[in-house]
Amino acid sequence: MADPLFEFTERLAAMFAVAGFPRMASRVLMTLMMSPDASLTAAELRDRLGISAAAVSGAITYLERLGMVRRRAQQGSRKELYELPEAAWYTASLRQPPFYSEIAGMLPAGIEAAKKAGAQGPLARLTEMQEFFEFMRTRMPELYEEWMRTRRGCADASTTE
Image (tube, rainbow, N blue to C red; front, top):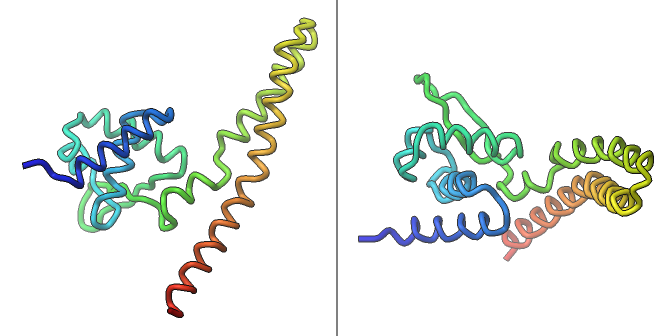
């Protein structure tokens, strides 16, 4: 018999993949999201998803880089537990990911190269791209703080009802 929660997890992961998130990272993230305590070992992820240890490792490495998953030593074992951060996974995506800073930091070299080459089209696009990533780099922490205030407000409202 099919497991409706697993099927939903796979559908949700597929939506993330369609939006451009790596397929395996999507599956691992959503599997962690749907686990009882938002944490699983590599072996549990491998068994639940029917994937290789290498696929789990690659997905975890990607998710860790984004701050969406963290490793924790499992007490009394050499195995590591992979878990979602204390703040829900979506708040991790609103923090200032290194990606924005890294891209913004790379763009001046491209802008300079486009200027030297007299390449007006690439220069305009690279300049706009730099402006966008600088905007995102500065706004993401503010959005995260706004989200945390909103969450606290929702939690406060639900306890007073």
